[in-house]
Length: 369
Image 1 (cartoon, rainbow, N blue to C red):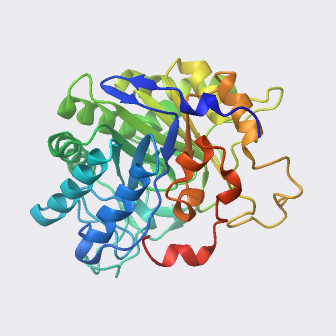
Image 2 (image 1 turned 120 degrees about the vertical axis):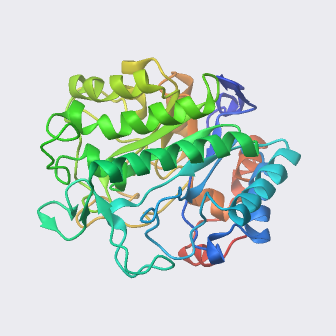
């Protein structure tokens, strides 16, 4: 492996200073009964801080809106007991010298009526669609939009009050904010639909309200993606010029850093350049960016039909990643499933003990460890 010192340089954005460039990626774990983080949750995040991770981004946690959750057993970010659980997580991470940000997550049309504990509440979407062309969800009214924005702002305020170090807003993977971004699921004819700029208005208003709630120096991260769970081949934009058009209003609204979700970090985003999505985002905005996508893995988790496997692809190893980081293509590196398998992934890589790293296996998702 190449010299890994680039991974272990400090980094500062706003009021947040990190000891290294390694981020724990947000990963849904479905291990929170009554939607309350448990003692196992506390230990799960504490171990990753102890293991040397620079910034932990939590699993998606739902703001106070009736349709925010789409899955059982996910933690919520409202209510006395739930916030008390998150405070224990924050304190445990800080005791190990770590930094932590909650990911605030509204599932939008991914929610199906019947999902507990809200029961028959249907998913909320911009145009009633979870998949393009199929209207099967609730179409959001202006009052619905206002209510969700208020819920995000309250979550942001609570994140700062509880002592979190930053905030991540989930705008990727075909969930609510991304369903506004995506023309396939946003067919509105009001101020929130139509052009790319109009489809971004909901996200802009969420970010602005969150910024007002936390003040100017508290870092706000936006996670976004081209691909959707509903369609791995979906794209918001096809070229750098359109990407710049998409990103500028989000920057102006108050985003400090972009978490650019790709399924494989080494794949270039546009023809004619080797830059990945995080690289283009940093180049176009000047804002710090986080790359993510199969870092540290040696096999596909959920390969799409017809896709190359890792053995056929270039590499999922760290050499290419380190070269890109050293070239300043992006600033931070998010590690997901490899950190489920290895709570001390960062320390082992730093100590050049990569031969001790365990391979990720799906069975590891069944419990917190």
